[in-house]
Length: 400
Length: 82
Image (cartoon, rainbow over all chains, first blue to last red; front, top):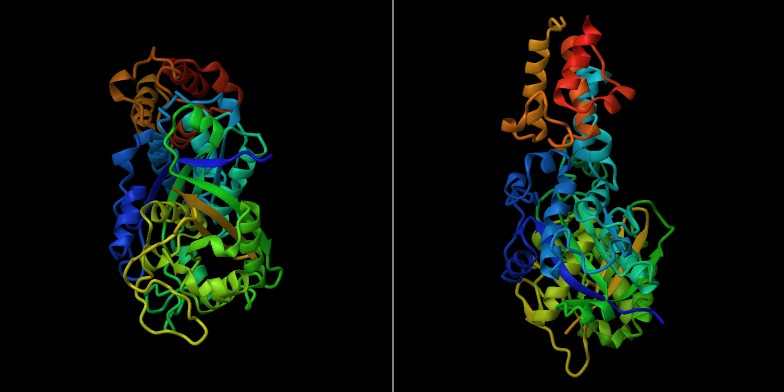
């Protein structure tokens, strides 16, 4: 019998500010973290949170993870150095799309301009994609299974799914998990631009007929997951539940989603099956909703394929309308937003929505938040995350 | 052009480098141990790079294990240069 996986702490650094509640409340109120076509975590100031040593030992993507992690652990009531379980049974799984690309780019510049002997010794420990996971396990003294997940824009959701599996199978009693990304660098911007993935208008308007690509963002979210029984025994406040994890691969194209959303629909159904629920149980979908022409069409088809007639009755909104696309952090940030939305019984809005497209006819919660109604059923949502490489990950989440 | 490897020069370089790694300036003395200053092997790799750049003398591999105090590092560099 699988163990229940509960969420006891959440933290976030996003273009809407520092803090999980800040993200949710500002998004709910219709505020946007996008400025001049970019979504920087502009309220994040490393020295407000980290010592000189901590800051220089971490690429920006790991810095985000530390600050989000500290918030999550504080909420869970885990004081530093005072863990509720044996540290050998606490893991750490943090996803990223690219890792420390800012460090890599600076290292390459130094190599070209000043030569091999000037390349900083900290380059490798800062730029490796598992740096955030290593940094957090070191910071909190977690001696269980720790690693990074790398599946482009599905990485944050993949991390949470893998973390939940570690607990379900008894490999860990708790896992610190999430996703982090700081890829707003010249190379990354140029490279995504060359793929024609970025919005020319600089407006993130998922599911709108005028959508023209994603707006790049940065940030992180970290969650504390625990074995439900143990969390209750220690009297932890339970914020929500990871009920199901579903994943599939399109095996169709490196960057384009399969146009009918077949793989994505499978991931949705697997997540619901894993949760022991049916499509009719879903009251809210936090969409991947990138604002690219291809994703939003394929995702809409996937939702209809998976949920059937019930799709028309579910509220679907995209966090990316407010904070842009946080790549490997997106799935984790959106999990945090989904849990807070479920707890509050409110669906935050898809911003900048104005012009419907034929066939894209779900309730996208345009521009203003709407209440979520669950009647006598538990408040269940799914959060979608799809990545280049054809990776589809769906989490089934619940809150009381 | 490498600087003259005198104890005075090397000490100045080391004392100026350590605060960049986040070490509290007031705690830096010749007798202070790197362990007490929370200076680990990654910091020493950076320090080594700074010293090599300045004096053309490298602190590598085995050296790091032998160095316990700030003074040990300074003395080793000076001995290499003489």
